[in-house]
Amino acid sequence: MKSPTRRVNDAHPFSVKGAAVAPANTLPVSRPSTTATRALAAVLVAAAVALVIGNRLYRTAEMTLASGILRLATGSGVYLVPERQAVYFGLGSAHAFGLRMSPECTSAFLVLPLLLIAAVLIGLRGRVAGRVLGALAVAVAVVVAVNQLRVLTLVGLISWLGTDQGYYWGHTFFGSMISVVGGAGALVLFVWQATR
Image (cartoon, rainbow, N blue to C red):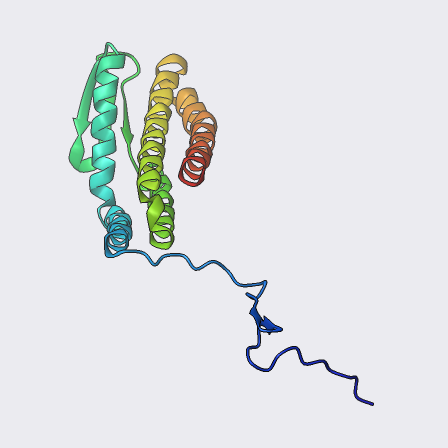
């Protein structure tokens, strides 16, 4: 047996006795991204691609920055070899040592997801572009500073504990801790600033 059906109004599927009623599950329509915000999102994606392709140049820039900081922070000789992404420190001392920035140790792999997340946020919600770019600038600065702190920690431990013990503790334990905590902190800071 059929259950009785009640027809409200044949004129409009969402009207009741002639009054229009909006359906309850309608989502607000957001404004589409403008050409400028789409272009900005594309620039950020292009920057991420350039970071992958030009990773060698990025690592050279990181080691150039590290050598400048080491010249200020240490009293011993520092020598930069840009084509090898390497810096030698402690020259003229008992603990002369060279560090090379390998692809696994660069901050580029922490900057890369920040660029892509920023591109997605700006592409989806163009009106927050200014806030996202500000958050991106702060987070990238934090990531770069954290990686420089990791290099300085490694140099300090090698100078203090000697080559074998200093490199082991500085690279394996403290360096990893600094990278993980700093990277996570930069990501949380970015999301908080971009979405608040």
